Amino acid sequence: MFQEFQSKYAELAVRVGVNIQPGQKLLVRAPIDSAEFTRLVVKKAYEAGAKEVVVLWNDDIITRTRYELAPDESFDEFPEYYVRAHDVAIEENWALLSIVAANPDLLKGIPADRIARANKAAGLAMDNFRMAMQADKVSWNIVACPSPVWADKVFPELPEENRMDALWNAIFAATRSDLDDPVTAWEDHIALLDGKSQFLNTSKFHALHLQAPGTDLTIELPELHVWTACGSYNSQGDLFVANIPTEEVFTMPRKEGVNGTVTNTLPLIYSGNVIDGFTLTFENGKIVDFTAEEGYETLQGLLDTDEGARYIGEIALVPYDSPISNTGILFYNTLFDENASIHLAIGSAYAFNLEGGKTMSKEELLSHGANQSITHVDFMIGSKDMSIDGITKDGERVPVFRNGNWA
Image 1 (cartoon, helix red, strand yellow):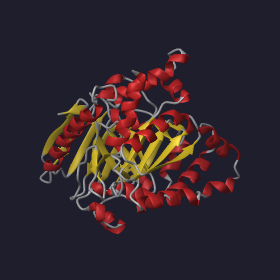
Image 2 (tube, rainbow, N blue to C red):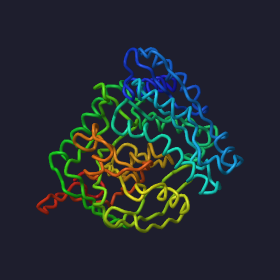
Image 3 (spheres, rainbow, N blue to C red):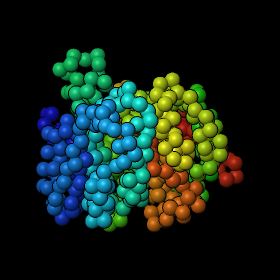
């Protein structure tokens, strides 16, 4: 059964995630811990008609060694070959698949300044690639693969020999890979989320008001905002699903239209560090104050990335009563944890969350209220106590969420 589920999961990544087209090339970014699963993905891609599959490998131990021993000035640089590989993929309409198996504590104890500088250098260098992804120029997808250190973090109460199996099974369930026909199940799921986005798009709310313990936040929405679910279309008109799993319906806030206070409800794993127990205070869209019980310096480094990192680029609605949330598992991985909770994103907005945004310039996007930044980091704020009202232009309040779920 394990081999069958893993095969279905790889099939999902290829046929639903990036939706590889006959004759198309695929760029895969993968950790060496996922080598067995990555080989299976490559096989599925060629079976689906891929012309060529190129894998860029990474390794947590090598990454950690660099942060410990590399000369200080190297953290202001980013490898040109890596940038060029991604630019070529965009230019030639490759599909892009990222396989993640991150260690939540990978960079624990590393000076926050090194992490912040490295992230800024990477963000600046990969700006063209990020803008292309956020405008749906190409098909892209992120899936996860367990690693021993990740499994140890998620299931410390289990015997060591059982932890990897437990994490695999949790991933299979969260991604519907354990069903008889996962591809059809995902088609149904996409249709369900599309229905929620259609309701929100029809409502054309001027703002949302979020209330929960530690949170009282008003988020204005751009006049041309568009609510989007899991399915997107690339520049060639091909449907793809950027995240597997996904349970969210999301749009962009108006850059300078966010006011109030918000408190996280799940830990944020950022650059191999845990940030938790944090509160952000907004005035006219900007984060003007923040606190954190854990990871304060890491959070400060994130917010200081650039001017846009003090604003948010996404509001995503996920019911508390949802598949991943109901497992009660804290994955310590944003790909899963963000789909168990309403969340916001620090940094850049997605161009496709504006009507006509996919073809807008940076200046045009900004003029319509879209935040610009070299970073985009989701953090979770949802709970069973969250209530959200939609506010119309006339000031009417319409219940959207009550007690953490759709009203």
